[in-house]
Image (cartoon, rainbow, N blue to C red; front, side):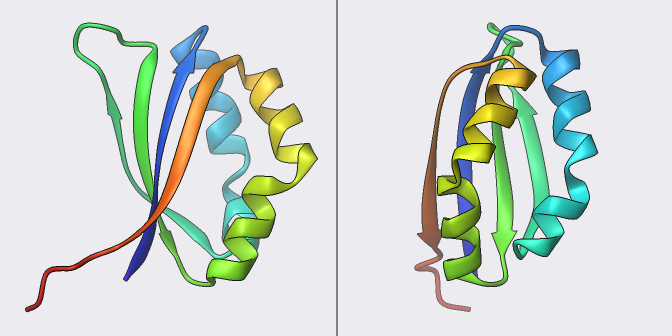
Length: 91
């Protein structure tokens, strides 16, 4: 399974989360499914989240689209990063 691990530092968690929730369809169309979301205990506006990736090419196109950066600005993202990862554990 491929996932994308994301980290954002945001101005206001509630505003950021509302924007994230409003983009569920867009994420789905890009082959992304939100699997988990965490907030830092010491810095609650520092969030980490994981999307399951159904199609790597579509996901890369989605996150690199300039429109995604604009959505991030609207959501109050101050800084962020993402990493595409593949599990190396064997069952």
